[in-house]
Length: 93
Image 1 (cartoon, rainbow, N blue to C red):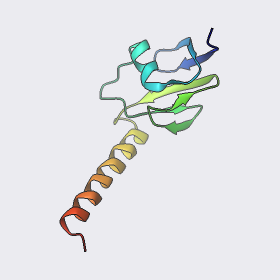
Image 2 (image 1 turned 45 degrees about the horizontal axis):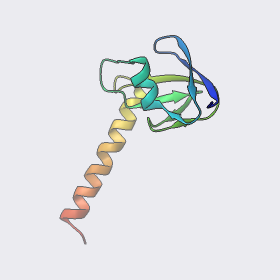
Image 3 (image 1 turned 90 degrees about the horizontal axis):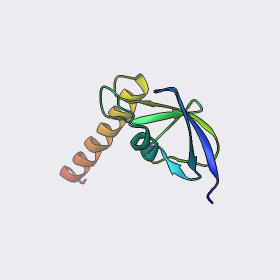
Image 4 (image 1 turned 45 degrees about the vertical axis):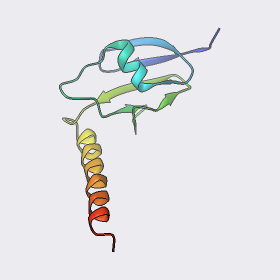
């Protein structure tokens, strides 16, 4: 039997056990987490991580969207990369 770890989700105040290596997208799906806008990232033990982050130890998780300042920074950074790529393709030199 796979070892289970405890994940505490601040968004819905739940505590649930998951197999080692579960990623945050699976937690969102399993717990039906919904925010006003698409979820962009999470704070895991107060560290900002992407949604493909895998969990191997008990953690406290809080998901956020663009209405959160960290979410806005993630969104802006992503748009910046798109702009840089477009400029490089249009003006290679």
